Each structure stands twice: as structure tokens, then as C-alpha cells.
Length: 478
Image (cartoon, rainbow, N blue to C red; front, side):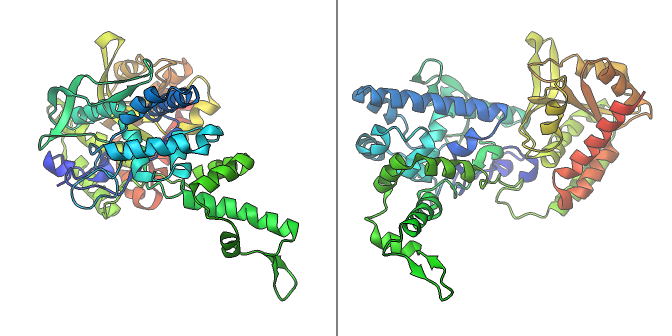
């Protein structure tokens, strides 16, 4: 039974930021450090800082011949069943790094010319050059290294969805990038059937079917060797009837010694530019998982259901919590993957002010990506959302409440949702913008319903088209 069912959240995967796992079975998704490294938003950047810190320290120990210390460091990359991801069948068994695997892989690491030659610069390269390491094992390595970030994310999502936590339980070993050490402490954790569970943002998971030994070998190494044989006019060159020369990849595989991971390391040592080309081109092939992840659901039915729920909630403070909870799900669906990791009522200014919802700006295209690039006065690493279950009552204090929380570090862009606004409200937002106090974009019920109706065909562009028009109105209103 999935998390949403276990805790009666009453939301589909579309409306949830975390992967809605079943704690009793693995989901065929993975944490790919290469993909995480290319995600430029706060959660991913903090996670990759830990990954990079760990691997750089490990390499430094190996290069400094501090083998026992490196072995101790490596030993904590044991199997991780907390995230319930991978290729196990039935209950999660962690096809990753068990103690025997850890020892065996560390020995392979010591023998690998990828280490001695210096061509392995990132932890994701384990998959390419180190025998017996696959995506399961790299995913488990990653989960252990970023466990603290995942614990904190799990705490935030549990608060957001009223999921109970168990107080003061061991965190399990996680990497402390500042102390350069593995740490363990008591924290509040999600425990299900006496098992600790980590929730994972769907924005950072992938199928990791591109950054692989097979992809590197088949589409980069063999392509290079084909061209080499053609240019040398080797015995492998054949001719089509029209005279065009060619070399088959099959003939190269038969001609060369076994093209295993050691061969790839030796090849890369001589041709590092081919591996760099593989890295650059592969990241463009890695796609974000869809909002529904692996659920087979009808987007139109979900959007119609959300519209009906929005219409059923009366305005006013009595139903503010219902409205707030619904808006979180609607915005998650509409803005994914451009906004992610929502947190509820974050304290700022030492708790003197609170924000209803805070999203990471995880956009790679679109409105929130282009906005700070076009206007340096509107940084938005985070996007703030205030939910007001009002009808025609929102005035200057509500705008001031939101804009008063802006800063260059946190961001200067926010969204104000409410049921219905007076016609002159855009003018108030324009005044705030003109005074350089930040950008507040209002969204009414009619805006959200329009976006939900268009979402099945247009995806995130449905809501971005609306907020782009709102921004244009704000900029050109006098």
C-alpha cells in the first residue's frame, strides 16, 4: 500500500512532490548523481554538494595511499532500503551495497586504472569503469551520502501532509560535508512497520538508462573506433555497391580484445575527449520523470476532480485549511517540474513572520527560469505562496505581508492565491513592482480552473501562460 493510502492523504501522485512509494516493494526508479549534478535548484545543489564532497575526499585518500582510511570511508556505503527504489522483486532487499559487495567493490576500485590514471572524477563514473557496479549500487551510494537531506525533506513533506513522525530515532550514517566524516544522530523519522522510510522528491529521480557502460561503449567508443579504422584504411573496411566505405561495430567488437570496463578505462585514458563528449551529450538525453511518475492515471479526470473540489470549498476562515491543502496539490500538479519541494509555513526573521508555502525554483525553461535572467531585481531561487480563502477582500496589507518577506537571498517573487479579486488589484501589484519591492502575482479561482482545464493538453505551460499574462499586466499598468 502506497504512502498516500497508508496515511489517507487523498492526493494522487500528480499532487504530491515526493515519489509515492509502497514501503513493501521497490519502485524501478533510481538516484542518479549525474542527473542530480545537473539540477540547479536548492535541494539538488545541497545534495550534490554532499556527493561531491564525499567523492573528492575518497579520491584524496586513495591518491594519498591512505588505504585503510579510504576503506573505512567506503564501508558506510552499505545497502539502503529506506528509499524503496531499485530493481528488487517483492520486498525491498537493497540490490545495492551489502558488506560483501562493499569489500569487493573497494578491491576493484584499488585495482582500477580509472583511479590510478585520474580519469574517474565523479561518483557516477563508478558505473562506467568499476566492475560489478550498476545503477542499483550507485543509487544506494547516493541515498546514503545524501541521507540527511532526504531526512529533512521527509520531515517537511510529513509536516505538509500531516503524516506522523517518530521522535528521536537514529538517523543512520550520513555524510557531513563540512566535517568530512560520516555522522549519526537522533532525529524525527518516518517509521512504517518498524522500518525507517525516506521520501524522495520526484524531481531528482530518474530511470538512469543513459549514463551507462553500454551507452558509452556503443555510441561513443565504437563510433570513434569506426572512424579510426576508416581513416587508416584497416582490414575491417568494407564497401557498399556504390563504393562507399564502412566499418561495422560488430567487426570492431570481434577484432578488439574484450571491451569491458577495464578496456573502457584504458581507452578513456588515451581519448579523454570522447568521455567528455559522452558526458555532455548524455545529460541532454536524461529526461525528468512525469508528474504522475509510474501511475497510470487520467490527467483530465484528476483536473476535473480538483476543479470540483475547489468549487465545493466555501470562502472564509472556517474553511481556510481545506483551501490551503487543496491549493498545495493544485500548484504541485500545475507547476511541476518547474517548482518543487513545497514546504509549509516556513519561519523567517527568527519566527516573527511565516510564509504559507515555499517552493524551490527548479525550472530549466519557462517563466521562473527566464524571469531572473531578464530582471536582476527579481531573483527567485525560492517562490513564496500565500493562500487567502477570501472573496474580494484582499487589500494592500496582504500584498505587503508577502512582499515584506522578500530578500535578495531568498527571492523577490511570490504568488498570492485567493478566491476572487477586485478589478483594481493588479494596480496594487503594479505599485509594489514599480516601487521595487518585488513581484506578487495574483491567482484567482478562475485562473486555477482555466489552467487545470488546459493542463492535460499543455502541461506546465497551462499555468505559465496565465502568470506570464499577469506579469505583463503588472509591468504595463500605470
